[in-house]
Length: 56
Image (cartoon, rainbow, N blue to C red; front, side, top):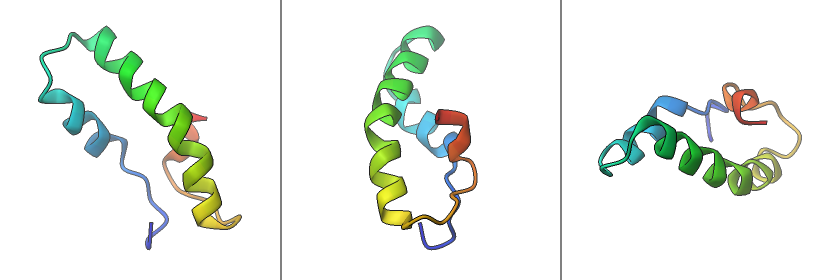
């Protein structure tokens, strides 16, 4: 957050360790980000977070 950059690849790496197919992994990532985006935006206090738009 200090650099205001969200790295979606790092998120994918977290789910890669689970034995899921790409579709199930994508669904879990999107479900997580649905909850995380508002929290990240609140923490950013109105500043833009690079890379987050892909999950909005």
